Amino acid sequence: METQQHLETSHNSKLDSAEIANLWTSYMNDTMATCVIQYFLQHVEDTEIKALLEYALHLSKQHIQTISQIFTDENIAIPYGFNEADVNLKAPRLYSDSFYLAYLVNMAKFGSNTYTVALANAARSDIRRFYTECGESSAELFNKSASVSISKGLFVRAPFIPAQQQAQYIQKQSFLSGWFGRRPLTAIEIMDLFFNKQRNEIGVALLIGFSQVATSQKVRDYMVRGKEIAGKHVEIFGSILSECDLPSPSSSDLMVMESTESPFSDKLMMFHTTALIAAGIGYYGASLGTSPRHDLSVHYTRLIGEIGIFADDGAKLMIQNGWLEQPPTAPDRSAIVKGTKS
Image (tube, rainbow, N blue to C red; front, side):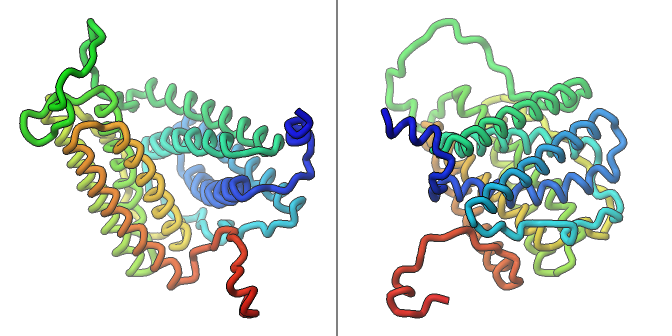
């Protein structure tokens, strides 16, 4: 009991590796988001969407301030992250207002997931309190963004299925089969397929814009490759839903303008893209674990491998350009013993 009380009341206990990992990641994501949203605010026309962007920017700035103070108090180096050098607020409009709204909805979903994990992995009371507040504000951002999206007729809902009249147990192992005599998709499988498709549609629009404005030809080529991969995944998930006669409407209003002047540094766009890949691998992994049909398992396994290779190539490109910031690491004991630690 005394130990539990000590954990609850002692602010002076050191941050553990999980807490450092989540705070470092949050700082990187929020400094990136601050740059992106500040640029969006230069061109947004819809007053409701503008208010949502301003709220999201306020949250990110709050997070940056809190994490910076925690790291300073703990004598931990504050990451470089992203700053005004990574955004050109004078660049012409690259995305439509409807894209801004879809981006916010997706960002709020992602934040809710990551903050829940960060909270569950934290021991110190101040860190738990911080991530509790982050989760609550992320949920508020989602609710506000979803309401605006619904009111404008832009919120794309998952397919509807008839109400099940009787609960039942699975009787045959053919329920797992996915190649011959395929059973209908479960509601869980439909949900995963639909939202994986939707996230990739937003990714396609984002990467089209990035491919137009990137300064480096290698970065442009990487963005085009990412757009093609995301587009292929959209087709795969949509075709599986169609095979079960389930509609899979697209977010058709995610317009990308014709500007070729970059609002963001190549470093920021590469980080943003690789962060989306990492999130995608996580979502696919969760879908893999909840999709009993064998053909779906094969799809998710193959697609995870494909975007894993894409992510590795992105990391190599970032390292070549000195853009990949190293997270806090454990001590290199071997180097210390050999006296070669830099």
